[in-house]
Image (cartoon, protein in one colour):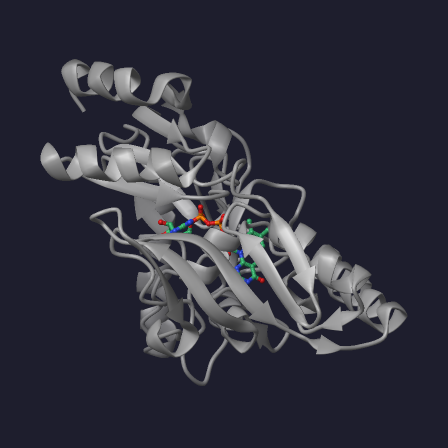
Length: 302
Ligand SMILES: Cc1cc2nc3c(=O)[nH]c(=O)nc-3n(C[C@H](O)[C@H](O)[C@H](O)COP(=O)(O)OP(=O)(O)OC[C@H]3O[C@@H](n4cnc5c(N)ncnc54)[C@H](O)[C@@H]3O)c2cc1C
């Protein structure tokens, strides 16, 4: 973004706009150069103003929440980055329904469900994202996924208009939905079932322990790097190709869970991209399976 556009956005949106923001501070991978301009959106009106400005000036923008499924370029991001976090964190329980903002952390939403003795969100407890990212990605684990509980999503279109979209119109699939492509998820309605609080909490604790046992949670990462290929497990294929511990620079295929690439310290985006490329080639050579990435590379990738 050029300086003039940044100054105009600052005039319109005040201190919600920040410049030269190191994206490594906003991604679970702890990787990424500076974003020229970031909107830390506090409300829908700010989003509408920003989208209108981008449309009028033909500027690209990128929407994100907790940055736990992103690999940001070392050269940073030239487009306007729109963060949906604080300001969109409300969680309300009414009967079997939960109304939650896209900035709410999944762990908090799952906690609210447990407190109200509602079952169906236990799977999401240990996923380190916010609702906006989880809806867009149709996040899932342990047999559960967002599409099982989401009834509708309140969406802001590129032109700033807002409407509630029923879940069946969002084309939820394996780690995908129709929310992306410049649309912004603002909040959603989820329907759960009545359960027993102690049983719900026990399930959450079991899943959390399984993550601790199997995943390299002590290192920065973006979770599973690859989608699960039909009929296989990415981690097993990578292990069979003898790639556990393989590394490029500071990026390493985790010894604990081959489906994860971890940042052992000082890893660059390029290290991770090169390692992904290497893993894809080796796995294809040994098994004939083409691994597709689940994490999303973004920014000035050259
Ligand atoms: C240790 C670890 C474990 C993980 N385990 C799992 C797991 O078990 N299952 C799983 O599915 N994932 C897992 N993940 C990946 C990640 O946490 C999920 O995909 C999560 O749902 C992403 O949410 P986020 O808020 O971080 O999204 P971000 O990374 O910020 O964004 C992800 C995508 O969503 C889009 N997006 C974000 N917010 C919005 C919004 N409000 N409106 C429109 N688009 C938006 C972004 O443009 C981007 O394309 C794991 C990650 C880590 C680091």
